[in-house]
Length: 304
Image (cartoon, rainbow, N blue to C red):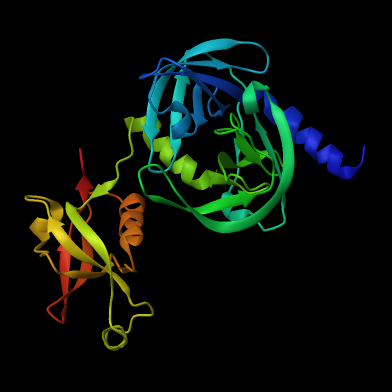
């Protein structure tokens, strides 16, 4: 075989045993939906997309070797489209997780999944672009999404996107209709972080401020005075009683400029900060109040 074929067949042979087909029974209709997943641990934790598991009352998982298991929902995070299932099994084949930050545009990638129920279908392509943003069903943005032209179809969601070393670099998640060759994968670094929290806590401990904000644009003069590279910011529309924002002294009509030293140029920046930073720590919040810049201290906490 030529080198390209050797790489692809090597990836397929190494990883296919750890790729699963998932059939989920939907709560409302009782109908079944299908998707893909990958085995994270030998004792039965399986990574997939939230939209594969969402709304399900039961799930069945089958491996390429014919074994079938009933699965429990260990945790679902719609904000990043990541979910973890658990099956009662041991000594399962597992995938190796890579580093999505190491990807380069044009790099060879291999996708494995179960499109339309066809078990362990292998497709290939390249990394078409990096740093894309994908808005999930909750309205939050997932950053650094991988764009690829490796063919995906319904049922491929939740399957692995792999590099030439058989390492998972992404979780296949979305197809753009009616375009061809435009598909997206959640970066594995994001999926690893979220899956770890779902396994440990059953949920993502995402920071909560207790504030409703809207996008606002500063005047060119104000942005220049504040030495901001962007005119974008967020204005506080509502503050929830007894929430962290209220306790910090934040007021409605305040304009949030930065949080923890990170510039806030829009609502997505604020949500991203709360996703990525631990709760229970104090952060400086720089705000513009009636034309004067002020610094407050805020401690985000777990909404639950």
